[in-house]
Image 1: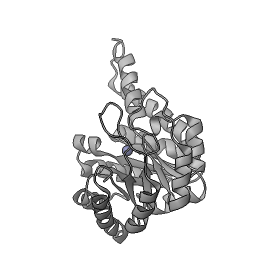
Image 2: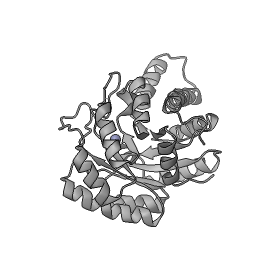
Image 3: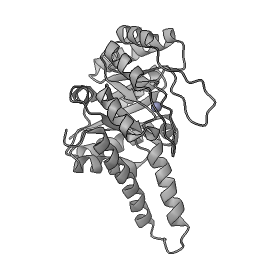
Length: 278
Ligand SMILES: [Zn+2]
């Protein structure tokens, strides 16, 4: 297959009460590990690149790797821009072949967030791909930021004026919560989802207990982002294995990294209910 538009799969997940996993990929090993695992489980999958990854490797290089890996796959693969930083980057992503976009204007005032989201939505619609936006302040563990739940009235206005395809919301979730349990406000999720009727996206999926994730999916979460969990698991794996001098086979170590990623992707795909949905 080639990379497919996220539009159809976001809607499919929303209608069928599962969530599509959006896995942050940082290199070819993670791109292949995610796609191969999704293939084994016959699950649609999103691979995404955020700003830290794009500061590390150019967008066109990652997009080319993703496109070629998707070409070999028997399942639909969506390439998503995570936390896009503005109009120019959205256009760059479209040129590179991304099939789903996010613009994150959650740190702006709502008027600016609406204005820029609208302009990117026009571009995304023109090429048949969906746009995710963010409202409320999710925040990142370890950073001194204001966190604020998404206001339901603002969400209604935002969805109406921008016509976005999905919305990332703040429910008490937080980015980069590794090794801790983060509880999200499920009543708040239910309220927002009932009022806007759009697929809702959960960022900071790493720290949310499995039961809460399952409930959240039944209440309108249609995409869950996973990044921190395997970055940290990769570091843990390397720390364990590199300390021993007999581990000097480079590819055996990289295979171990891939397996670490595969195990997490498998667990998530099963948790999100997307296995067998491709
Ligand atoms: Zn995020």
